[in-house]
Every structure is written in structure tokens, then in C-alpha cells.
Amino acid sequence: MDTNQKLICQCGCCQVIPPKKSHNRYTPKFIKGHSNRTRKIKPFDVEKAFWNRVYKRIENECWGWEGYLMPNGYGQLKVKERNVYAHRFSFKLHFGFLPDHLLVCHKCDNRNCVNPNHLFLGTHKENTRDMDLKGRRVTKPGKQKINETDAKQIRALSKDGIHVNMIAEKYKLKPCTIRNIIAGRIWKNIG
Image (cartoon, rainbow, N blue to C red; front, side, top):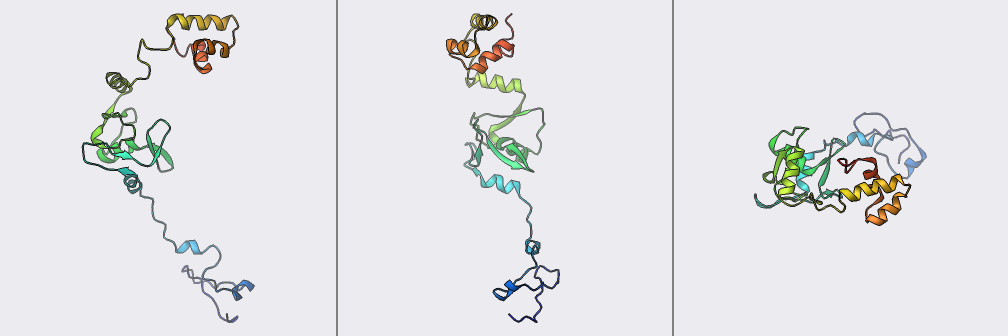
């Protein structure tokens, strides 16, 4: 490289690149830090990212979410640095609105489905009723692991000083469940 030759930064700033010894080995194109100026930063297209992760079938079949799945089975994507459920994003994308106080429920009971024809708005109560009608509730009323008498005994054992882990072993429950019974967060209706 000719030492008298002036190198101009190619980012468009028209500044002269200051000479360095390393320039004998290679010819620089940019002043340090200026190369990023030439890249055009494309805005992130959330809608395109959404469709890239959807396995779309015919209209009345489930459209599977092929992106990240939460441990609870619902799809998730990032929108403006926030994690959003994929089925909620799908509803808003197709219908244009999504009230904060309402849930987006599935007619198909497939948690990773994002087909707008399978989604509907409902309150928490309506979603629970729908879940009960379809038999999806994990513990239906009357099918719990313990009954009212057991809950009273658990509270009595705790008052007698029996450790939570011992009570949990006896009733084959998790210690956190026992703590919730003792604290009155669950089985509230008993004295």
C-alpha cells in the first residue's frame, strides 16, 4: 500500500482513515466503528416472525405453533421486548382487538393452536365452565386427593407441632400444598 495514498471511509462520512502500521498488511475500508453505519437496520417484522412459526393447515384444522412452547404447552413469541402468548397474538392479528380483561380461549383445547377460527374471547369464569364441560379440569369437584375432614386434620396436626414434611408424607401431598391448607389459601371454607 502506498503510504501517501489517503483512504476515505466508505460509510459515507468522507473522513480520511488515520494511517496505522497494520494497514501495510491490509487496506481498511472503514474508520473503526463506522462499518455499522452502512448496514441498513431493518425493523423487526413481528407478523412475519409469527407466520414463520405457524404450521398452517386447512381452515378448520388446528394450526400448530412451531416456535417456543412454554412448559404449560402454550406458544410464546416476543413482541416489543415482551413475551406474548402466540394464541393471543393470533387473535389480535386477525380480529384487530384484544381487551385486557378477557382471556383468549380455545374451542379445540389444543394449547399450541393459533387458528383464529378456534379462538374465542371469554372471562375466567366462562373458561373454567368450558373446561369443566369438556372434562379438562385436573381435579374436578369431588375428585380431590383429600376431603374436608383431611384438611381439618392437617390443620390440627400442624397446630400440634407436626412438621409439614411429615404431614405431606402421610397424605401423599407436596409440602407446599400442606402449607397452603394450613395458611387457608386452599380449603378456605373449613374452620
